[in-house]
Length: 124
Image (cartoon, rainbow, N blue to C red; front, side):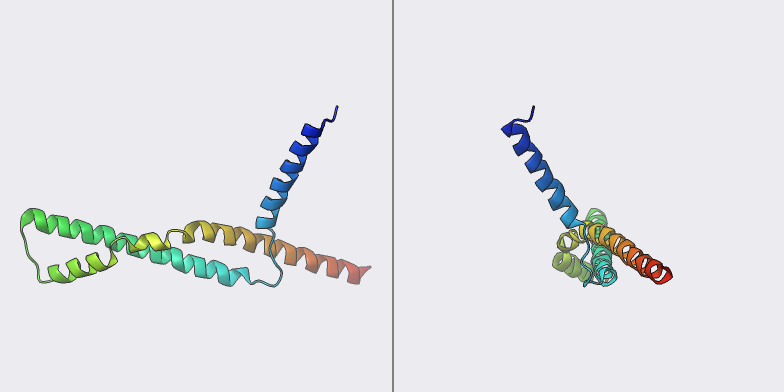
C-alpha cells in the first residue's frame, strides 16, 4: 500500500539524493585541476603554520622553564604572538581539497567518456 506519508518520504529521499549528486557533479566549464592546486596550497599553508606554531610554543615554554635567554628569543616571541592561531584560518582547505579532488576525478571520467563516445561515433 502506498500512502501519502510513504510518497512524501520517498520525495524527501529523492530530494536529498539529488542534492548530494549535485554536489559531486562537475561543471564542464571549470578546470578542477587549478582549484585542487589552490586548495592544496592552502592546506600546505595550514601545515606549515601549524608546525611553526607548535615549534614556537615549545621553544617559548622551554625558555621560560630554564630561564634561558637566546638572541633569537625576541624574534620567536614576536613571530609567535603575531601568528598564534592563524593556522586555523586555513583549516577549511582540507575538506575543500577532498571535495575538489572528487570533482576532478568525476570531471576526468566525464571527459574520457565523451572522448570514447566521439571515437565510437567515428567508427560507426
